[in-house]
Image (spheres, rainbow, N blue to C red):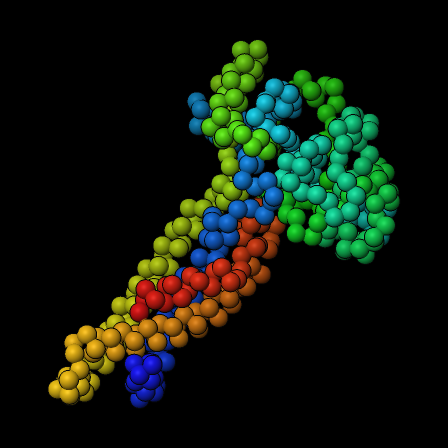
Length: 382
């Protein structure tokens, strides 16, 4: 306590210098905290789906062409789903634009065609109603629609009796069978507001040359990612032998959901985290120079304390206490800077419907978990 009191007194004696140091550290620590909150959201925390740990994106790969994330043809997906034993659910999906009419002004919204089992793959349960049944994958019976929570609120006024009502999608009547929960986000780039059943027409079930579907799968609890990859390799080899004209050189690439969602954002975030780390090092160097200059000015005071009996360790401890106090103040101000920065980034970029939302950047925030980071950085800075 005596050290802290002396440190406060020394800081009050040099208010201008103390203010410059605190602001310098606040900018450095704030920038690091802001970027860490984004890195934590995208790379460290699991995606916000109950089955996130076991969900994998399933792509076709073509090694000779150097491509590892090729969309899947309808017939290949159906064979994968029928023959694979490693996944509890496997679901394909395709984004589309939909004309929504029948209640209010007509509007064009983002939509998606998904099969039964799509929401079960992610572990999502609707807030109202149910998800698609297997029978609704039949051509001519795909007359149900599931809507997002945002669309339910915006267009239908949060109508609690929405399930069972009819809306027109692309000039066809569809019955609303479910409303998704408010915290659900589509796991890829687009942000659909309504979902219709993916029903393959008989002629589509034999198509292997038109690659248009993305696929996800939920591994069974006793199946590792390596085992699932090995099984899918065998299935791909079998299809290659059976359909050499269209499947030669086509393999399967399994990507964990978190890695898939991070995508191209991952290396950029790591580079940015390294960059702001260097900024903090520069800030530390500048603050160290300021404190060295101050130390030269109070050398006589230090000599008097030593003459009065203060040990070398006692003097060092007092100096470190002052540094720690400055860093703590810089860290506290840095939290404010980080919060403002993250809010600005989220409003300007992360909330937009783009690859940012696919990576989950719109969820970035300075919460209690992230708050541990600036104070750990402040301790290291001191």
